Length: 302
Image 1: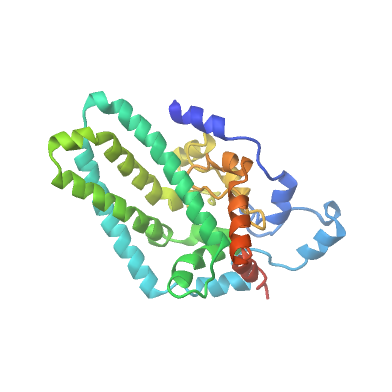
Image 2: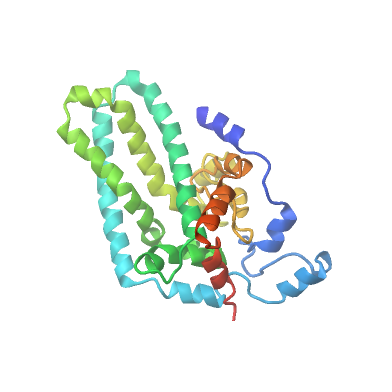
């Protein structure tokens, strides 16, 4: 009930029109065509730009180059992170349930809501930073962590072809320190101390789960066939990121709606110009243009 109320309050009118979405983003539910707009519906400038195919998708040269940069070392890191994280999830779940008291159910509900909001904002912050700044050419960080963001913008459906490990490895890695510290607290504190901080422990645990599952939720928002009914239910009621909502982010130049766990915070953050203000401050301070590397890869069509 609380989740439904919050999602209803935070979901407002999209910041992109249907025309903008159709014209400036890949139609993922029609992957064999980069646009369904007829030439008569477009201006001369837009008609000319659409002739430069493909603008998006697996045949885009930039997307192909970026996909080849996925290395065996990166794969190994993702496998290790996924297995350790799942082990810590199971361990912490057992410890959370072991110390649960029925009178604390309200704490768990509040912890879940704040955990979702924290994960949603965190996903937006990381997504915005990786989309907007840096370069694939940066040592270590570039090819291992920024590369997937560049590939995703010019081939949004690539994520649907990634397996569980490649999809979730980095997010599971982010959740590891939280889950590790939480387990340490359970094993080193007295029962009285655990009960005193139970609400915080529940918040950290649930927040780490939402962080870990963010990219899987993101993958579902790009999947137009074969989703389980329960996923469609969560999307349709905006409990997790809906497909139509996330399409707004994929309108070039990808400058808005960065939160991808639930998307609840996208509209309010856009309303207060949160991301654009940060970009203006950074550009003024450093001289670096936002999304310069992203734009460079998008131009590699042939």
